[in-house]
Amino acid sequence: MLGTVIHRLESVPSTNDAARELVRSGAAHGTVVVADEQTRGRGTKGRVWHSPPGLGLYASFILRWDDPAGLGESFALLPLAAGLASAEAVLESSGVEVRLKWPNDLVRERKKLGGILTEGVLRPGAPGHAVVGIGINVNHVEADFPAGLREAATSLRLASGRPADREALLRGLCRSLDCWYNSLVRGEGEAVLGGCVERMAFSPGQRIRVTTARGETEGAYRGLGPQGRLLLDRAAGAASFSSEEIEALDWE
Ligand code: BTN
Image (cartoon, rainbow, N blue to C red; front, side, top):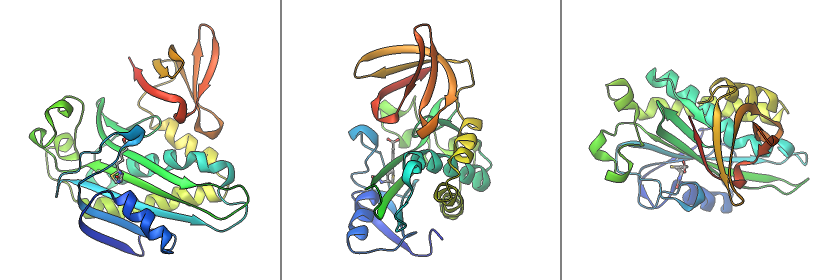
């Protein structure tokens, strides 16, 4: 069960870094690190995750598998499972409906409400581990975001008009991530993909623009494929993208 052991920290550079330290010292599967503030919160692609004290949920979950088969193919689906779990926990604890912007973002009316940073080690046929870091803007008002983020970011409080309970959100995350992680371990990646497609911010046929190191391409969103790849129908033919190759993704 996730969250049987929870390390609660007041201020920490990054809960993902603290969790990695705990992994090195042998912390068990399901251990959680949560902080009131992060002074060097990290986002994907080297970005900063703004983490002021008392306002957001900043939590990292340690997942370990010993079975030689491990998570295998499902490893690539972990960030999607975490997004799905976050959307469920947000809805359950605050009544706010969020959509998933593939691959790592939680969005509400096109504004970013949260993000996922998954870091881990997968060695074929060997035990492995991952740290799933989840950041959710909970009780921020507009002035709490840096000026450059105000247009693009939102919080549960801004979405619902009332303060939200970070503790209830954390409990919901433990439950929901536990459930979807176990689906992956049982080889039920299809269920995770189905849940993500249902909550995706864009609908089939919608125009999507993708930027990769090779340049920009556009197409109609078709769904998610094996390994959680983004499927697009383009004039030049069908294409699929992994989260690693994407630099930016926009939709109409
Ligand atoms: C993103 O959208 O770029 C991912 C943001 C992930 C932020 C969370 S907050 C808890 C954990 N600790 C970190 O330093 N980052 C993740």
